[in-house]
Image (cartoon, helix red, strand yellow):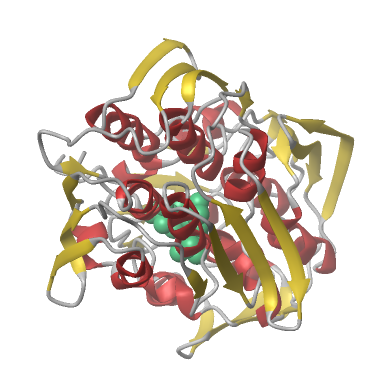
Length: 443
Ligand SMILES: O=C(O)C1=C[C@@H](OP(=O)(O)O)[C@@H](O)[C@H](O)C1
Ligand SMILES: C=C(OP(=O)(O)O)C(=O)O
């Protein structure tokens, strides 16, 4: 649903030690994929631990519009009755993906090789984001695309009646581009190949293999070469969604910067393609233990035990960017509470997320007394072991910007406010009660 509610201002104040268990929600990337692959499988896919954030609910609604039966059985427990590869029917209305880049881009891929026509819209933030990165490779399969100027939403796609397979090298490191191409390839004959020079999150490949598709990944001089054989019959699999490492980052950061804190975050995905923040935090000297490592639903998970302690600035190399792309806003906050300079390299993609995240964080942190530098592709924070606070920050319809500044306010001298915390519901609907449960002064 597009965002139309009134802005919801929120404030966070310096808090005492945070203690307890933080059960963060299910992984957003895996939740979208479970609904989409469930809709493309023949029969019933049972999902547990699904994130019930607005982004994912919008994808569930879209799958219904394309003809799948999607049913909520209980908290995080969903059943999808799929129509099979190539079985999507033409939706009656416009597909509104709200705030979700993943939702809109993956669904465009999933329908582009089926002979139906669909129009996609989103909220003001999503309507600013580039769609050509996905519609360009989808056109190679034979679909027809019309878009607003600059290849923005609304976008209408007339799916290819006679699709052809594709060989495509992604121009930027993006799991959304890779996944859109792979989902389109499902209903193209023969083999489609996607090449990515930097590896990105691999949930689509893992889940496709789990649903019975023939898919392989080879590491070559060109990068990762992913090959998918088209027209499989996807077989429903139970999907157990692990807790989201990108959402876990917020209580983890809060525990690292609020003196005296010690929290436990159970069952968090430790997929290596998502682990960059945790690698970086260990380099900064963070006290994080990974307990009970195990496999759940085909993904490695562990329980995180996090304690407050001194942190030092580090340089995050560009080749790590993709594995922590959504965590740079909260890392820039943690970096303010470290001693020394943190340099984040290769982060240009942050400029085309729900907001320009380099600009949004730099402006808000400087207003709260931090020393921050930015170029097109880097962000630098000169950490002073603390933050003054006292300012109101603009969130620009961006959940991660809202949560980052609120976490900063828990450890700064003066409170920090955000102009609108409502976007938090897209990925972490229980953020406020969860943080309050740990002892955070937030509301
Ligand atoms: O594939 C996914 O689920 C996602 C991929 C990333 O986007 P890009 O593919 O644009 O890097 C990430 O920022 C987004 O939150 C989720
Ligand atoms: C970038 C994000 O999501 P999306 O691209 O799906 O809107 C995010 O969740 O940080």
